[in-house]
Image (cartoon, rainbow, N blue to C red; front, top):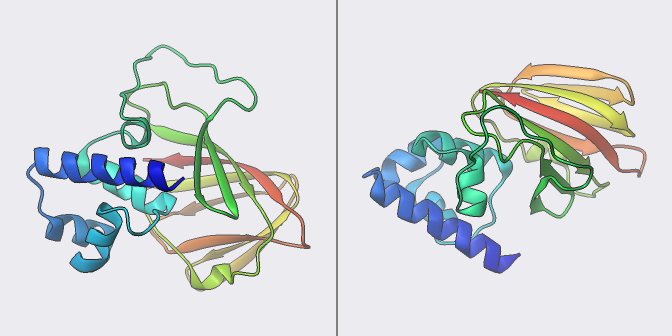
Length: 185
C-alpha cells in the first residue's frame, strides 16, 4: 500500500508541475495549508477519496489517471464484472471499487463501497468534494454525517446530498455496511 501511495503522490506532483499549477493553488483547492498539501503530495500522508477526487478535478484529470497512470479509453459502454472494480483502499475501514474506471469523460463516478465497523469517530473526520452524491444501502446499517446533521440508513434506504458539505460515514451495530455510491460531477 505504501508503494502505491508513493506512486500516486508522484503522479500528482508530476501532473501539477506539467499543468503549471502551484502548490498554493492546489492547497487552496483542497482546503488545506500548503504544508499539509505537500505532505500528501510527497507521499507522507495517505489520501482520502475526497482529496483524490478534488485533486483530479483541479488537474483536469479522471481519478483513474491518478490511480493507475493510464487514461480510460471506452466511450460507448463498460462492463465491470463482480469483484473486478478498480480498488481504492484509502483507509482500513473503507474499501472502494470503482465500477466505471475504463470509461472516459464520465459525468458520474459509480463505486461499490464497503465500510467496516470502526472505533474511529467518523463525525470528526468529515471531507467534502464537488458534486452531488447518491448512496443506496445494499447491506447493513450506517450513519451518515453531513454538515451538522446525522442520518441513520439501513438496507434498502437511499440518501442523496450535496457533497460540498463536509460528510463522513460510519458502519453501525458492529457490522459492515455495503452500498452503491454514485458521485455526480
